[in-house]
Length: 631
Image (cartoon, rainbow, N blue to C red; front, side, top):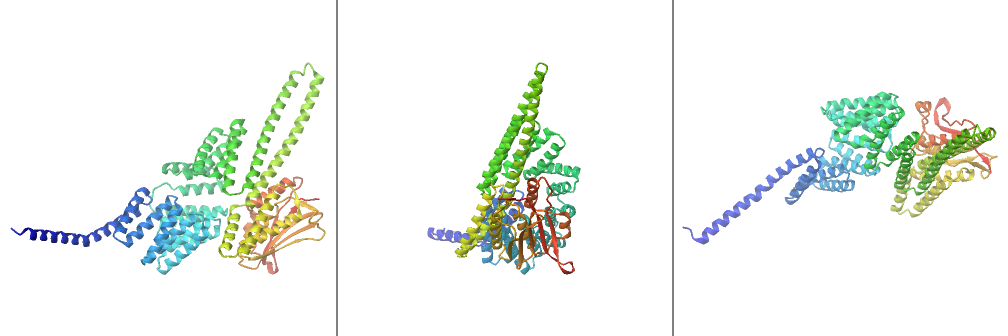
């Protein structure tokens, strides 16, 4: 028997040895387990995001407990991607920024481009496209340094998608085409499919549907090469849009029906909205009112669920018109009120309270017009009944009453035509006001003001803010008037172009001239007719000029008629643009206003290239006649 104290000492030594062995062996086992968990998280992010988030959170804590850098980095990166997929943009940015800083501190260069691309996607989803574009370029630079062609392709595709989201279709096509070349070489068909989809969408936005049709089929071939058998939602949707634009109506209906089937199969309620709305329109055109209303209502539930205010406005407006057409004025009135409510919410989101007042005024006038029309129809019907009932007894009186009814009917008709014309003009003015006070212009202006403030350029910021507030007031005040003085129009245009020069880094100069013989204070003209064409000259005519741009605005008289003309020294119009006469939304609205104002004659908007020696293009000129009167 060993002494008691000796036995205790031996037991203590054995325990210490066992603990020491555990302290050296355990981290090795844990790091292997963590690596396995990281792979499981990566495989589960899209299939089972809730499980992936829980596993990544637990594995991150374990990595922090044993101070395992790779585990900390990879699980933070995974949690950022999961947050993005869940719509938690701010959380995703925070996690990806943490992963980027941690990865750089520990030399994980091979993953840096991936984190930068994810961070770019986060900012793009949050609306900060300038930051997103800068991060994609940084990611591409890092990928080039380590010769990671696959990641270069992902960065190029991200750039293309970002440019597509902000309406730069040509840039989207350029970057996605470069990405597609890389994915073809790497045989990454899943990524290739998304590049082709973005290119197809860009061509759709450019109204080049033949090219879009080609890339839609290329995306399908790339998808088939992946061996996946999940319904091809994007293929059906793009084909439906393209076929509709190419006047292949039956094919469009077929593909929208396929969209609905596939969307319900995978529970994709986002894709269901446009498909249901399109089929509703087609059923309404075919006279199938019941089916049309059913589709519209199902689509409305989805637009309300996802807070798609534009979709809700369109659908409720269509339902109101459909019910009114079928004589159901109760439901027509109900959906007209819903449309007004959605319009109000939409305008509030864009922070244009003045437009809300104008829209409410229009809705009130529209409802008043419908009420007057119904009242007139009821009164006419009653008078006709009275005339018929008393015709035999009071021949002469009945004839007089009939004549009175006819006179009243004529007066009502003229009044109704006047109301329709006034409402149409009011609607066009509101639509044009929305294009002039568009969120893109407002947010860019506010962003520039903030940048000047952050750069301690207080005087420039105050000057810019003064001009911007003055322009906003001018647009809102003029929108209430049917006619304004030419001097007021000139003042607003000069202020508008000064703000545009600040937005475009002073890459152009402008000049406004009024020919002799025109008194700007005496000439009255409809407001907001000229600004859309000046905007087109700046945005499209000078888009390739970094400096030296010139915008010349001129008002002149010809054959006792007032004309407006704007010229630029840009690259000119392509032959296709000249032939097809492509117009922006704002210029289309202006054209409709001109038709409404000058209903007694046809006014043509002329847009043509300015050519010099040897037919070289030196810019674009747009001119048209403006209806006017003297004060």
